[in-house]
Image (tube, rainbow, N blue to C red):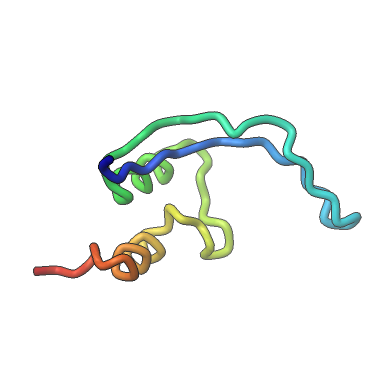
Length: 76
């Protein structure tokens, strides 16, 4: 089976003051992509998207680092 990349959405209730985190809905699929770059580009195109303190999988630098780590980000 070929590798694919799926984008999911979920809704989480967060109350950091009380250290409470609860999934309320999802995850629900938004799309399936042939490459990490395509999936990340889709996420970056969503209205209101902002990276989460540099930890977002859709952040271009994180995409590059991941692809390099799995041996697919090297230029030939």
